[in-house]
Image (tube, rainbow, N blue to C red; front, side, top):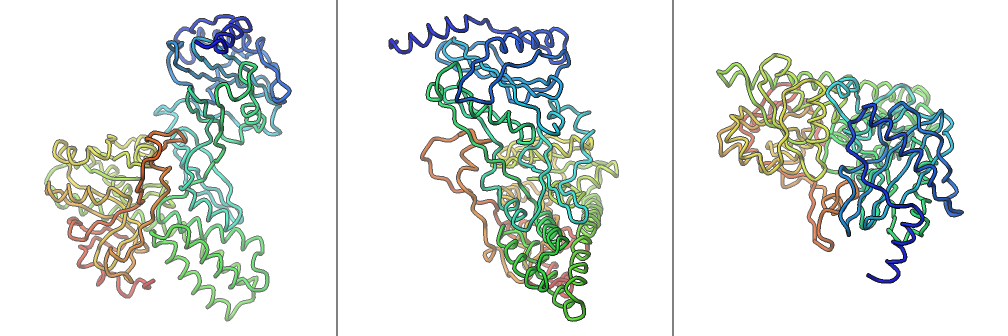
Amino acid sequence: MSSCCMFCRWFLWWRFGKTRPRPAEVPGSSTANAERSDRGEALCRNTVSSSSSPSCHTCLPHPSTPLPPLLAAPPGTLPPPGRGHFSADSFRHGETLCVYVCVWKNLNVIRACISPYPPPSPPPLPPPPLSSSFICSVMTLEAIRYRSGSLQILNQLLLPHQTVYEDIRSVQGAYEAIKSMKVGSPRCLHVAGVGSFVLPPPHTSTHTEQGVLGLILGGWNRGVLGVTTDLSLPVQVRGAPAIAIVGCLSLAVELRAGAGGDDPVTFIRESLCHLTSARPTAVNMGRAARELMEFAENESMEKNSEQLRESAISWIEDMLQRDVNDNKKIGNYGAQHILSGVPRDSVTVLTHCNTGSLATAGYGTALGVVRSLHGLGRLKRMYCTETRPYNQGSRLTAYEAVAEGIPATLITDSMAALTMREMDITAVVVGADRVVANGDTANKVGTYQLAIAAKHHGIPFYVAAPSTSCDLSLESGRDIIIEVRPPEELTSINGVPIAAPGIEVWNPAFDVTPHQLITGGIITELGVFLPSELQAALTGRLTAL
């Protein structure tokens, strides 16, 4: 061991003293609360001050009321030599939010405590660890919140652990939210040799953020443990119907504020063109843009600029209710069609990605079919895939299922074929981002292999999508533009690298399922059609893009 390392260990021993591992705690117990209070006070007494960390102060006494941690703390106690361990907790004293951090490194304890100034209007702390009762209490959860002139969207990248709504104040804000999957990770604190840990959302307290960033752990500079940060907090809008709704509602927000002046038609045209470019594979935004543009041009012939703005806003606001109504029809048609083909009383369904309330204005498409089956008392169980790399199945579909008491089981993507063979799957139901004239369907990557496995096992394979997701201008799936996502989405989770550095990555967001594999049918709000029947059924109702 080098003399420098020996000196560091001696100094830390002398400065802080040897700390024993804390005993296991039962969250919410009186013993745990007392020990947390003791730890908080002890840490406060040993707070490290530094001129380069102006936000570090002596913490106030720990209150007796237990509060949930703001920073993720991995389980375990003191690690063996050469291993690192990070722990963090938080508490409030009056209006002040206090956060304390412990870092174990090579059997030494480097301790620090930060106590920010109170925020002007402190919001409630994040919820405690998920439980059935907690989830049910918040699952009036909406992906989109809108009232005239105001739009908020749920940041789905933070689910299921945090429920954060973000304001969308402009068309550009909506464009970035729709596009933002490319940076998709919560803010993280990275400590080299120790690990990476999710920080609380920024509205908790700006001083907390500054304190963590300015923290000089153990009186040493950042180079000792290599503290770096990723402060990007992206907002994610996903689901083809939701993309179109959020994009158009952001336009309504700007129109309500008087955007476009005396020429709102030009403003609407330019805004819609910009929004359509955010996610090229999903057809709904492009169709909504065309229909809204035609409506605005027709209205401009008879109305002045202010009247035109009001008409466009009303057209956009009607999209919300139209989407919910269409989704309920899809759910009912799909449930009836699946039940008509089976003699048994209950059915077992497998689905992929998230196609529920979080991907639409409400109810959902493929998950809407599952909801309808459950509502009829005919659903035995739903199996949902985790859906890598963004884990929409494990984070979102499982979340919705637990919230509504839908019997569900989560599986990995690679378990789907085995599940079909062993779990008596009645039908596979998936959503769609684009269905073309011959029935070929673009959906979340992984759908194609599910269709192949379903065909092999003789299981009906359904696509559930509104007619607005059908694009009759394209003849086959070969014409669909497939979006390729950044490699970081595959090589890391929540900002934590999981792949070997330097590995090449191919990360398409979607794949195309040939129409021959869609054996159950395509479920729309107009009914259920075989791929060969789709074009005839929709011609005349849809405007080809």
